[in-house]
Image 1 (cartoon, rainbow, N blue to C red):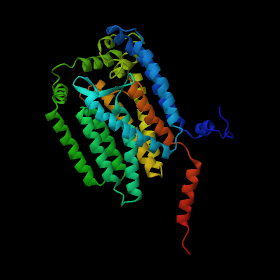
Image 2 (cartoon, one colour; image 1 turned 135 degrees about the vertical axis):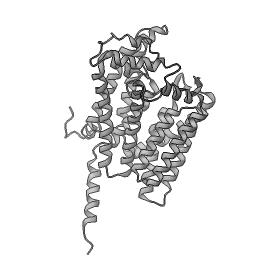
Image 3 (spheres, helix red, strand yellow; image 1 turned 180 degrees about the horizontal axis):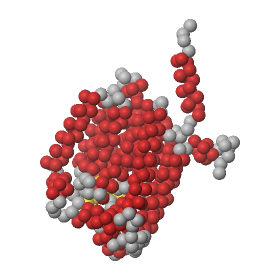
Image 4 (tube, rainbow, N blue to C red; image 1 turned 90 degrees about the vertical axis):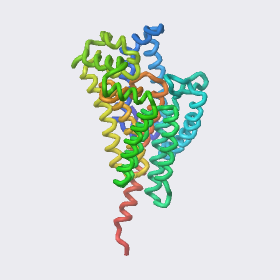
Length: 383
């Protein structure tokens, strides 16, 4: 335990960090490892790998993810912005490159191989996009003559275009929804809300008309016809588990779910540990989102408010989409459950995002003193 008299960077970090956030993130990482041991052996054996191949790799991914999250949490706001700008430029280049040299999987190009590592640029693009839009919105509010909102719209259009070109409509909806929440926090007029809502509905109809795989998924969801094996088995696993589950390692439905270690790990948690575990997982995600939004609401700095609100929104929306797919509440969409689903790119990218949340929500006494001095100066009547 660090002493409050210790002024070293680590001690200062410990006494200023939001330890509730930190505990929640560590809990999700721990659950990811536990559920990987429960969900992945059947998948590994089915494709001829060692039983604990994916579980071991989950641990290997989690260790650097934890290191990255803690390292980012030491940064100041200005450093966060600089880091986000560099990430944004690099990921935009990779998003263009992936269209030409990316690995094609099921008709989509979302992965690029660098130095033997497979990277999904869109995962790393999300936190950088959120931070830069937060900065643009904040600059416009600070100086209305700066066209920050316009630049944020242009950035959204660029990112959406690259995502649709892959195509990755799930990430497109996630990024657009998060951008809309941030714009609303920045004082979006009701006319814009109506216009953007109409554009969103129009975008869904356009996707249904243009992309056959989107139409197929929506039709299967609405009619129940066609190949719905994986989502049916995901729901069956949840039903089979009941309230308290069948016990660790005793699940049977998980053995036939192709992506039980990734997109459908939530169903495995329900089968082996019961709906109680599902509610526990949901409560952790809800706690992170609500605490993040509450912290953002109390924040005086516009950039910090928009950035924290945007980061926890994209985090929460991704979790909601994944869990809703498992519950057959929305059409099937390949989207990971943050910190829990198997995946290297996803783990590291989410760790960067939550490291930014930890950094931006740290208690900064000097900042509060400056804010208090400024408010006191305003309160003094002119002589």
